[in-house]
Image (cartoon, rainbow, N blue to C red; front, top):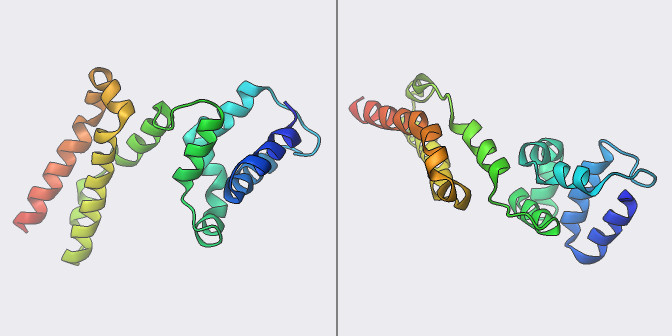
Amino acid sequence: MKLSSFLEDIKENEKEVVYYCCNHLLSKKFDVENDSVTYDELKEMFVDYNNFSKLLNDSAGIIYKKYEADLNDVYKTVCSKFNEDPDNKYVFDFRLARVANQEPAQFLNIEDKDTQETVIEKFEDKINTILESKYYNDNKNELSNDLIIPQRTLELIKSAAEAS
């Protein structure tokens, strides 16, 4: 698939922010005017959420400020172009990596109680987002063990913060 054709389709049929993100992501790896890739390669580049967010990280300010958009909304649009569910294994793995292996000390060493409470709430929100996701619930039997340690860490942090 010619990248210029793919981008032209995005430009004509999607919001400007989606075109901006697709062009930015592809420009990092290819000559978008001349290069071609297979449909599967293209799909993998966009649907792999870790790759998607990493390649767009340097333009987050533009996405949020200029377009007043959210990267997840762009991701959902791109997934729909590839007939992929945006609540998928890639997103689950990305979210899990953000809650796995958290050290309780990093939360408990925050001296300001309001800041500590906010940080703990954000950690809890991240865990709840995973627990409420369609992908997690569809695969709960296989995935629930992955969340045991983050959930226990959260319980430990909350009880230690309340005790102090």
